[in-house]
Image (cartoon, rainbow, N blue to C red; front, side, top):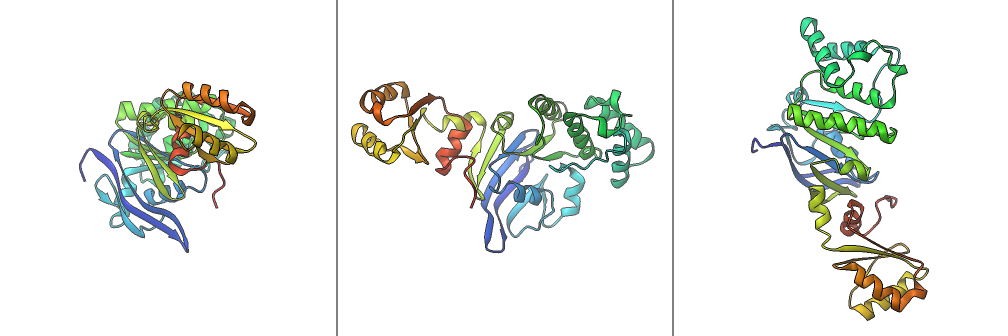
Amino acid sequence: MPQSFAVNVENLSHRYGSHEALKDVCFSVETGKIFGLLGPNGGGKTTLFRLLCTLLPIQSGKLSILGLDVFQKPDEVRKLVGITFQSPSLDDRLTIRENLKYQSYLYGIRGKQMHQRIDDLLEKLGLSDRKNDYVKSLSGGLKRRVEIAKGMLHNPEVLLLDEPNTGLDPGARKDVWTYIKQLRDVQNMTVIVTTHLMDEAENCDQLGILDHGVLVANGTPDELRESIGGDCITIHSDDPDALLVKIESAFQLTPQKIGSLLRIEKESGHELVRDIVEQFSDDIRSIVLGKPTLEDVFISKTGHQFWEEIS
């Protein structure tokens, strides 16, 4: 694997009985980049994250981290990655420093090296002045920073973050992302983060969009939006099927039907909006024109809305 890539995934598939959670997933992550796995609940993010963490066996395909085959050398991989899970792992009855101290013991880090490493992390994550505070007194954002510090005690080269901002208010989420970007910019750390939040996905250098276990899109946020190739028009109608036929006949284009909505991708969309409203105003409850968003990318690639229930 080229040294420029920290993670390489080739034709990765995984099943739970008859359910195929991942289907032939392929992507690579450049060293020193933030890669986001974006998708709705049930889309395959958790399974892929567990495979990256070496918590699940490789069933089919290949997964390499820093040139090491995860299937053949899981113990060596674990020494090189830091992990922050979605579920809290801090002891509320201990201070920040005590939590980091006992985590250091689990990594076999002791003595002067341990104290130096903890102090360095507390400084880098802006926690030095709170090191003796009990975790139960911290805000959600501060707790997530301590969680990240725990995963970095052994100087990992790749950091894996599972839904790091779940349950946090917008201010705390912004705070956590500030520190994630510092890890990339200052330490050239490769970060892989799972998320179901579109605004968080915008912070990533590269995105892989998962749906029903399939990687439906992969690229930078700008590249993905540009793939739409025009403006996005969304029409809400009481009878979308009838309106679809009318638009198809009048303009020789076929809208995409998403539930009760019709969706059209078109250059110079404002002109089409004008013409549709002029001809079919009685059939329209609302019509919206906008530049493509990541949600538009998801709908375009999958044919359904992001929060449609996974069956």
